[in-house]
Amino acid sequence: MTLVAPDSAGAPNSAGILGSAATANPARTSGTAGTAGSLVAPDSVAVAELSPLDALDHARRQCAAALARIDFDRLGDDDSIRALGSVEALGRLADTARVSTATTVERRSAKWLGKDSLARQRGCHNGSELITVVTRVSGREVAHRLKLGKHVLPRHELTQIQPPLFPAVAAALAGGDLGIDAAEAIVTGLSELRARVNPDLLEVAEEALVAAATGLESESTEGMPNAGFPFDADSIRGQVTVWAARLDPDGAAPNEDIYEARSNIGFGPFRNGLYPLRGGVTPELRGIMDGITDTYLSAHTETPGNGGLLPDAHLADPDGAAARDAATAATTATTATTATATTATDRDSDFGTNSDSAFPDSSGITGPVNSGPAFPSAAEQAVEQAAQAARQARIDAGELPDDPIPFDDRTTNEKRADIFRAVFDHAARDPKTPTMGGSAPTVMVHVNARDLADDHGVGWIDGVEAPVSMRTVKQMICAGGFQEIVLGGNNEVLELGHEERFFNRRQRRAMAARDGGCVIPGCTAPPAWTEGHHVIPWAINQKTDISNGVLLCWYHHHSIETSGWKLRMVNGAPQVKAPPWLDPTRTWRPGGQHRATASSTSISRT
Image 1 (tube, one colour):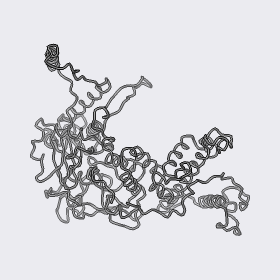
Image 2: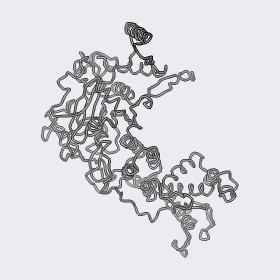
Image 3: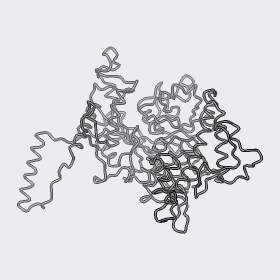
Image 4: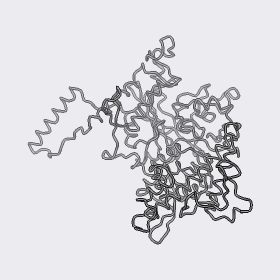
C-alpha cells in the first residue's frame, strides 16, 4: 500500500541544515529591516548561483518582504482564507527544517564524540543547550523537535544510514503537506505499538493516518470514508486511538483484571475554598456520566414528571410514558462484514421485552449499563458470613482445600467511584429525569459483530474517544440484552424502513450505527447531539426512510442550505461534496461511518 507522495526534490537535507541565520551574505545590502530595498538581493546575483545557505537566507528575506507588503486587516474574506492557508503552508516547511536542523545538531553533539562534540566546541554542555542558545526557544520545544526528528529522519547507526521509522510521515513533512502537531500525534501513537504489532500493519495505519491528515489520495485510500478530506490534528489524535484499538485491542482496552483500568475518585487538599477532585474514570463510566449531563444540557430536553428544569405547564409527557418506552434496552450490531452493538439504560425492570427491542433479520448489540456496584445489604452480608463460616468448617475438617477466599480489593477511591456510578445509573432510570428526543439517558455501545464472535476487539461508546474492552461489552449485553442492525457491503442499513414524517427511534439507531455522528467531515458531534435530515426534502417525495436520511449536528443541519455542503445517497450510504473554498475539485466523497464498522481482524496489506 503506497500513498502518492509529493515530490521530495525540495525536501530538507537529511543531515539537516547547519549554520546561523546570520551567516555573512555578500549579496545582502544595508538598510532598515522591513523595507523592500533592503530585503531583495541584487539582480546581478542569480539565486541559482548562491550557495545553499545563501539561498536560504535570500528566501527568508523574500518571505519577509512579501509578508511586509500585506495588510491582513484590509484583505477581503476570500483573500483572508487564502492568506491563512499560504502562511500555514510556509510554516509547515519551516517547521520541518527546524526538526531537521535540531536533530542534526543534537547528533553531532553526542557525548561519545568527546572534544569533537559540536556542543562542546561551542561551549555548551549538550546539544539541547546549544540549540536553545542559537534558536532562543524553550527547552520543551527543543525536546519536541528532537523526539519527532528521531522518528522521521534517516537514522545514523554506526557506519550505516537507515531509513526513517515512519517514511510516510517523513515524506508528507518534507513536502509541506503535514503539520508538526499531526505528525507528533501519529508517530507518538504508533510508536507505542511497534513492539506488539506487525510492521506491515503499522505501515498500513501510518499511510491511512497521513492520508487523513493531508487529504492526499491514492489507490489505497479510494472509497475510504472521508477520503480526500484533510483533518485537523485533534481529529488525527482520535483516529490514532481508533487504529491503536484495532491493531492492539488487548493493549488499548485489556480484558484481564490485572491490566484493566479502574475508576477512582478522591479529593486533594483544601485550597481557594474548594476541595479539588482527583482521579479518573473509565470510558464506560464517562459514557454513563455524559448520558445524564448531555440530557440535562441538551436544548431538546423534556422533563417528565418535573425534574426541576421546567414548570409543570411545559411538560410534554407528564406521566413519563414516552420516556419509559423510549428507554428500552437496545444493542446494535452490524453484520454483513460489520457489526454495531449499542447499550442503553432502561427505566423498566423487564429489560428487552419491548416490541421495539429486536429487529427482524438483523444483528447488533445493545443493553443497559450495569446497574451499579455490588454493595451487599445487611441480610446479604449475614448470608455471606454464614457461607464463609460453613466453608471454613469444611476446610478444618479436610473436606475442602485451604484456598484463599476472594476478597474485595478495591481501594477507597475505587469504591467511591463505584458509588458515583450507581448514583448516575439511578438517575438515568428515574422517571423524573429529563428525556432527550423522547429517549431516556442512554449509553450506546457499538461493537463489530465479527469481533464479538471472535472475542477479540473493542467496543465504542458514542461521544467517548477511548474504547471499552470486549469484556465490558459482554457484561453490558448480559445485563440488558441486545439488538442487531445489519449493514450491507456499501455501509447501507438493510430493511429498516418505516415511512413516517420524522425519523423514529429505530431509524435513528440504525443511522447512528452507519454514520457514527454528524456526516460532515471533521465534525465531532456524536449521534446523541445530531438530528435526522432528509437528503431529498420530505415535501418532494414524502419519504422518511434510512435510505434518505443522514445524521447532522444542529449547526450543520441549520446551515446545510447556505454553507455550500452538498449531500446525496448512493446505494443507501451518504456521500458529501465540500464547498469550493475547501475542495476546488467539487468531488463527491463517501460520508462518515461508525468506527466499529471495520473489523480488528480484517486489516491486511493488499
